[in-house]
Amino acid sequence: MNRINRLFSEKKNNILSLYFCAGHPTIDSAPHIIETLARGGIDMIEVGIPFSDPMADGPVIQDAATKALRNGMTFSRLFDQLSDIRQRGIDVPIILMGYLNPIMQFGFEECCRRAAECGVDGFIIPDLPFKDYMRDFRPVSDRYGLRIIMLITPETEDERIRFIDDHTDGFIYMVSSAATTGAQRSFDQAKQDYFRRIDAMNLRNPRMIGFGISNRQTLTSAMANASGAIIGSKFVTLLDQTGTPEEALRLLRAALE
Image (cartoon, rainbow, N blue to C red; front, side, top):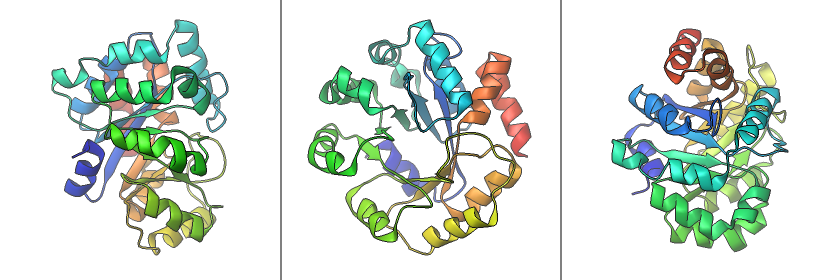
């Protein structure tokens, strides 16, 4: 069973997933960050592939991506770094988040092949059109046992949400707002209404809420309305400030208490 599916079958609530950008803060830090997070009790890990035009990301993650690219991070280098990650006893789901341009340049089938060899469990590709996913990407990812996670926003119509739910597997990534990534102090009434609306749809796939989660208030709200939460900018900021995943994780947990 794919580790993403296994996680959601074994743990229904309070799932915590963290994002970081490969190649940041140093070119070779990804394996150590993954190991630290997995051994520190994080349920799922999202590894960002740096790109020069990350349209869904706010300034914090854009800055991390810029530094990673300057460090020389590439798809191929990341796969080399992750080649023995499962031999280290790491068994949490690992998802690669990347944009379509570098994925297509690398070659999607080759990307799937290398990912499967490393024990990666899936992809998040924010700018992948759904029709292209259905026609070209899903058949390939399915062949390698990988999940492609699709995003929905408050503006996504119910009919489309149900269509996504019917044709994907793993979980649905609920973007908290139509804005880019970045920490928020609280979720307003409109976002709360959106969370409850989607919850009431009784979708087949579990849901994770991301974008803006940085403190106890936003985390509690996400956990109450989905299977769990995805934290990116807050952790990346702490990683940038401390330089070590151990200290960044400790400070993050303190901020969420």
